[in-house]
Image 1: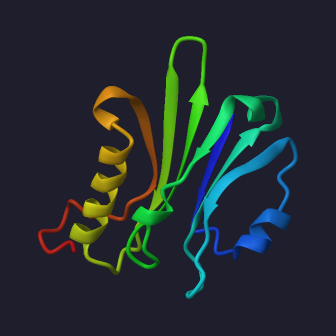
Image 2: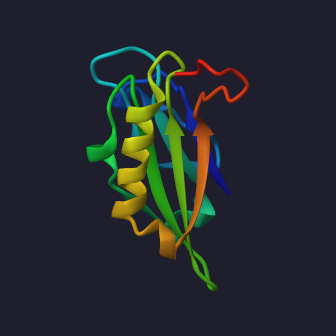
Length: 129
């Protein structure tokens, strides 16, 4: 019922014009200065009134950490969905710091948060950035 796209590579106006049948764009991060990258979150049209976009743009940096976040209201609890993209060529530490900012700002320790996306951290190599 929720669709998270990373590396959509579209400008904001292009993304808003892109239609996925049965789904509505809820929120996104689109690059302004560089090509590619980005995160978009769609919801099934029947869920649109249960989903709220949350502004995480102050914790996003092109080419370092890109994110979009929504809150899904259910009968039992609120579920937060955080879509992220971290380019593989960039250092991990700044991205983790920005992720930490979002989690702290939204009180992650008290909420159910689904972290979805393309984090690009290679734990199999010692020299992973």
